[in-house]
Image 1 (cartoon, one colour):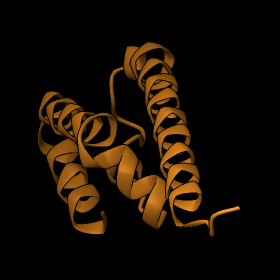
Image 2: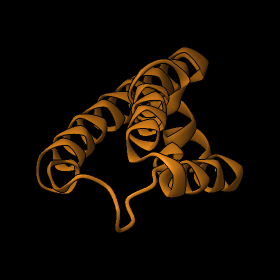
Image 3: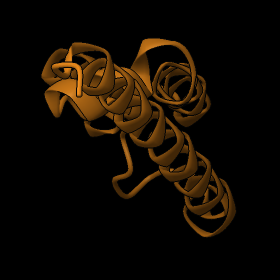
Length: 98
């Protein structure tokens, strides 16, 4: 996460639009595939790689970032629920017969 964030910071000094594109890639990783899974199972927060420092366009702070954070929170909740269901099924499957 640290390397990705530093890369984004370097881009921000040169071209804020490139940093926006980099952040969008991080959003995609955090939202789809293994992003929610590694957060739920291992506590790895891909969103720590987001560059949200001064220098980004105002709409990034006021519109895009809050909207994406809400979507990612929902994806993580869905993953938590799926993990809980899977654990319940395994516990039931491994329980001794009555």
